[in-house]
Image (cartoon, rainbow, N blue to C red; front, side, top):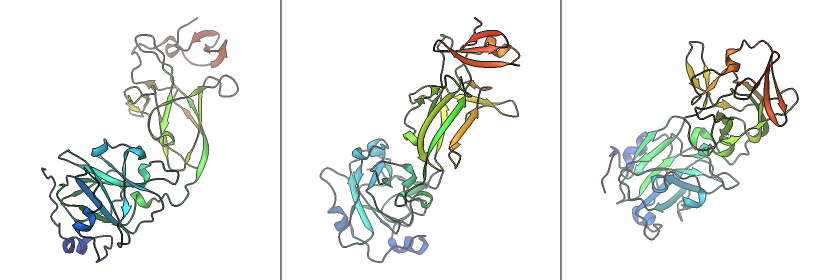
Length: 317
């Protein structure tokens, strides 16, 4: 197999001299690690860590199209008679193999919060460690003729699923722009974030009465420090997002909102637009908005600008 990214210090002595994590002098040899190779597997990956481990550890990467489904991922198991060492094997026919260990949460679900930390070093094997964008790294370009052996002292940013994260019940209230495409299809906001693994947008509920009538609401439980944002569709298409106008007059995609101690989050994006909105302004956008009221009449949203009445698409009635 073709090998990319040759690592200059393949020998243990060379790496240990510069390691940021202390590697024990007793390291399992290739024969010991290869004994854990599953039938049909062609890659063995082993690691040593001083990080706290309380849940299963899986390996995700190119072999599984970076799946986050724990049932589709190979698991690490302890190396007998070698404390702190773990090993797994997998089948990967690609030439540029990539991947990383991830510790699962206590409920058995996957989270990128607990992936390989950026203090990882190579003990031996043809493998590169590539820094990520937020305290994370990938293993990449390693061959399959010998086990890949690494060591690290922490999970991403020092996170640990062994300490229960603080969770809150959050309520997000959004005043969203109204928009339709050229076919006349209207768009409602969808919310997406860590609370659902950034898997797909979830439709928000239109508030029918009270102080926030005509706005959208969504309630969920999540951890402090996690984030969310908005899009127009429930699928993985990110082309139709709510856009906002900056002080220089430039449109930009609505940003990620990080969760904090405030459990009720109110956002006014009504002056924004959707990426795929038709260019022509609607009647509502052309009227000087001095007194705008949004009410639910007969189960649908109606907008009053002064005494004039418009539907949700901005068409005067």
